[in-house]
Length: 354
Ligand SMILES: Nc1ncnc2c1ncn2[C@@H]1O[C@H](COP(=O)(O)OP(=O)(O)OP(=O)(O)O)[C@@H](O)[C@H]1O
Ligand SMILES: [Mg+2]
Image (cartoon, rainbow, N blue to C red):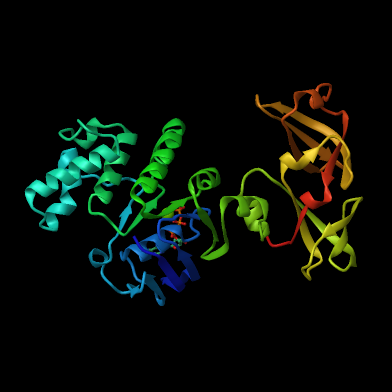
């Protein structure tokens, strides 16, 4: 149970740089998530924190102690893999007890600790089963119990839910959060699922090809993305390429197609920009500070508690609006004209990146 600090971690495999200088500061008792697409370096970062691999350069500290080249078993960080890696020939009890036995913990104490861990993951009564006699979710909980029973300083979870069906994923992610709070441990969690990251994390680091693009709370990352990559990675969102055509201090006018929007906030130098607009911020009524875009309805999709309107602008630009009010959308049919209104403060202007 310590703070974890990574300083400028670089890792190269056969000439390709997997990590290009990762720096992170994770607080004691925090549930911290590494989020990013396949191949961005999430597992490599976790393996380096666990001591299963070593960086080319950079430093790792657990509290005041430098652990960069300390072997895994001396560090107290335990990694749970995506595929659980339970021993098939061992019972649930023996799987969980294994780490204690190799540490030569007395038999009576092992029994107590395994029982404690089973209770924690709600698997009491399953001690004599074999992994093949368990569901995916139960196997996953055994893997977590096995990691927790050695009382790690840091628990590392690498896509622990990816083998589970959608419903079980939701249940298990709440379970992980509960166990983390109950034990007050530091958890570093890896996922490529932005919704899972948002739901479970205290803070998130969004990674992109070996670098960290942004670190923040789920709310900060969602509402104030600092790069185009982060904005487009965080769920369904509108990212519209545009050009700055006028500047007045930090207020700008942009153009895309034949549209012209003024009074937007922007402080960067580049004139090639994207406008980031969350679907739920688009309205069908004008307001005091709104800009408007008129196009035609392409699709209206009803989801129950909200409806999405996908509209086409000048035949090619697609913008999604999401509204929770049914009344507003009645009467809207494909090919009908529609005007979207967006508060200027809800348009995030970022330098074009991708
Ligand atoms: N042992 C290795 N040898 C060579 N290249 C590797 C090795 N391990 C990882 N890489 C490369 O390093 C990069 C980062 O890999 P990593 O496994 O950390 O990605 P990831 O973010 O965990 O992806 P995923 O979501 O698919 O699990 C990838 O380009 C990968 O091919
Ligand atoms: Mg991985």
